[in-house]
Image 1 (tube, helix red, strand yellow):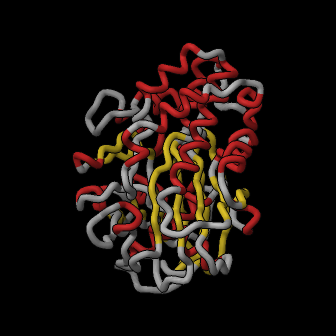
Image 2: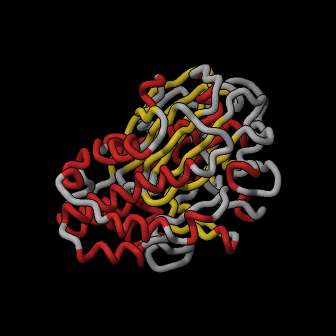
Amino acid sequence: MAKQGATWVLGTMSGTSLDGVDAAMLRTDGHEIFEFGPDAYRPYTAAEQQTIRKAFGQWPGDPDAASAAEVVETAHAEILARFSGAEMIGFHGQTLAHDPAHRRTHQAGNGQLLAKALNLPVVWDFRSNDVQMGGQGAPLAPFFHFACARWIKATKPLAILNLGGVGNITWIDPSQPSPDSPGTLLAFDTGPANAPINDLMQIRLGQTHDENGALAATGKVDEKLVQAFLAQAYFHKIPPKSLDRNDFQPFFKKTHKLCNADAAATLTAIAAACVVKAAEHFPQPITRLLVAGGGRHNATMMAQISQRMNCTVEPIESAGLNGDMLEAQAFAYLAARVAYGLPTSAPGTTGVAAAVGGGQISRP
């Protein structure tokens, strides 16, 4: 455990949409945000994406897991070496498989290797402890979202939505004293967001994503498929709850019959409808939904969410926060909490029985 006090931490995130590695610095004492620092982005090459994609669903020791881990470690070492002034690193790694029902989760990448390469303490393996204690192990950003709500001086309940490969949402009551206080947070995965759209674009058109939702905007939504999707058991389950990137792959085979534009439109509508469905679980209504992650750049997806939600929907930049770096900043914040012996998840965020700390610390 480190000595409590404000410190500069460098956090990273490599999401399931496989675009690349985000890294961002944050000065925090694990409670408050004092200052946001520099950030950077390191895209994965097409070959690197392919190597990681081959390992999706695999566990340590499986055929392609080691190659994926090597890509993840190399990419992180490259981007982290660009920074100076950090006293600690929060390294999330790359999720390859997530199975909380069997109390296991797999994020590729070894923090000990990075600690030696960068000569800094590295906090990593954030999810395993929560999963082993019976939690979902995700989402983990909510404690940071609470700090963000305080930083923007919010006084009424609001929600922060992250549209990555999978969507996750945090309902926040900023009037509560701490993130692990009962009733402060409710967080869970909404459903698929960018991942199935990205997969569609890659498989059919050789493109990484639907830029600005342009293809989806020209298509027709198959509303029957949208409603059939929402009829699945996950959407009726009381949160907290979480998903793996590939949980709905069998369903998405039903979009194979659709033309490119209609398939993109339908997958985009599904992502938006999942967010609306999620709002049914909020303890109190919200008047503001702040959107982070790559999906906020998809104008068609944002329009769909706005049309379906009964509140203001806006990019998180409208509140003075950086939607591209929010998750990297979150793991900087969580690293500080781990170092200071503070909890990183609670019953309202992952369904774990009691507030629990996660992560391990590797030193050079």
